[in-house]
Image (cartoon, rainbow, N blue to C red; front, side):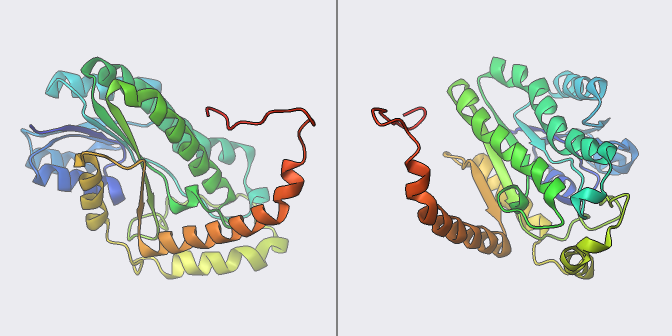
Length: 285
């Protein structure tokens, strides 16, 4: 039986690659974009299995309309892919309050609200997959990406807690954590701070040179990422986390090693904070 996908941000990048791969399989897709004309040609090429819908994930009316369009055309939603997002690079101090809030509106609140919009449908079906595309930056942050990583860390925590809430209802949650892929992450949509502060240059400039200097040369292939996502969705036992790219695994393993060393160094001091007669058990244990 074919699945119905609702994918946010299908004009470029992972969203586009996943939409194309899903349509090639014969599944159905609600192609969403802030400018639906950017996905109109793909929808026309698969007119029986795809529709193009305007969606700004920060707009409540757009979210509702996208869900309604999916139900009206295809009768169900089997997979929600929260892919739409925005990058940023720069010292936190240089971003304005408005930019900070915009980053969270798109990358975090948009994901949460889109998920809330689809959950009643999946709950009634007693089945579904929610796929949240974060980043290796949702597990391991580095200077220059503090704001961006904050939004991705938030989605990681949201997804992990949500998994336990919806699993008894037949709904799976998958977090996709890519490393460097040849998408438009380093393109014009990447948010720049309003103010450049010289004191941070030593930290920020090497990251800028790496990100922009390697644009178009990243090791990750978005088409292969799309196939990996589909494999996880189709799995009998879908993973909570799907990390993509050797660079992502390397960064995560490096962080885990450093964390473990630091935890052990401070373990006794941290543990020795309970009342003498306290009985300590893990939360939820």
